[in-house]
Image 1 (cartoon, rainbow, N blue to C red):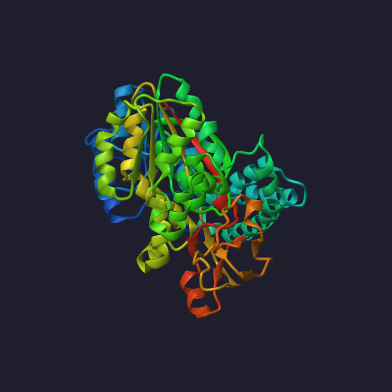
Image 2 (cartoon, rainbow, N blue to C red; image 1 turned 30 degrees about the horizontal axis):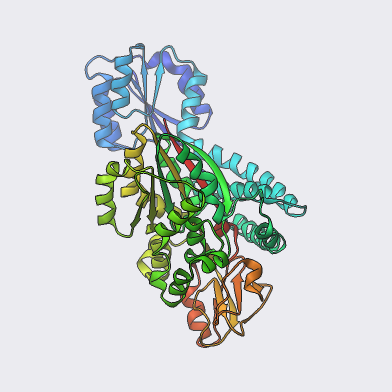
Length: 520
């Protein structure tokens, strides 16, 4: 049996409230009473209560003084203030003293019961409705997977899955988490089939309706350069939709959000997707126009994205857009530099376009793979989201956005280059010594992999990928698979299991938001 919730009702005219007290007893609550503040404070110190109803006007120690003493003795104890006065100043003082609710006399029994349910049973009642609603949604999603789906259908489905993922974070005891994870895996399996069918047709269509990485700047940034405003374009490396929604909660007091979605190109990895965003080109076209950039990126991982500012300026040049002053570019790799840039960000508002790349989330994903401490802090996706939110809450990025939001004639566009997926299943891959070491995609010669677990790209040109003397074909992992070579297979299988990786084909990696932040 559930333990009865205990209520303390403090009122110098408690005898006039017998009907209210009987109703609460009938509804299963245990109620104790006190007729003055001094007795109430002693009871709170001696016993454990779940809720206090507190009269504001009492002889002796008044309601607000009693409230302060109760909060000192038990800071988390919910208190409902009951008063005859509707004075705004009194309400503000009570709210400032951290009351949970406020009722004006005369109160009827149904008001009291509603207050109890809202404070004491809200989570349980909400959980019952969440369970019911998710079961209905589960059926709808399962039905949708059996029929034809286009790009918009997949975006909507991924948004639903993501919203439920976050909703269940607040209800860990419902026992629905595994059901959702299984359904997400089923969705990713179907999504991989959809991408195999549609991806090449997107690449070959000059007037495609779906937005891909090379379209992001042209469709979402360049139109604002025709206005008399300064545009700040933020790219947060490796940010997923669920992580953005956690950040959005912290920004909701300052901004409204105009959101659209795009699909990352393949592989969903920084050298491909982010270079593609800034260049407005697919990798094969980028390699033809700027061979020195691509060759450097294949020879030295640290140089992969050193040329983004130049690529963006060349994109502006092709679009015949001349900016005075010239565009600015900033890459934030550590907290100290981030704080310096935050303090000086308004000086960049003199430029028409400032691009800011933020690397922390990508560093977090990679760091978690190698750090037992980070794995302990973020053992699952719910904790990973929470950790991202905690970082953002205390980050220079939040300060930058709030500062820019207070300025006139500033446009803020925020996006990401790719997401990441939690990898739980290993896929054995065979290749020669020169094959790349990435966990979600590989390029090289003589690659062999189970094609149920990966997409095999025999001719890279079909995917608008660069073909070099080393690269003859690519493989990209589907769903939540990660590649492991046969040599020392079990060691690396265990080392990288349950890590967040990118480069392959999943909703989390490919379906990405582009947000314009509108100051309130």
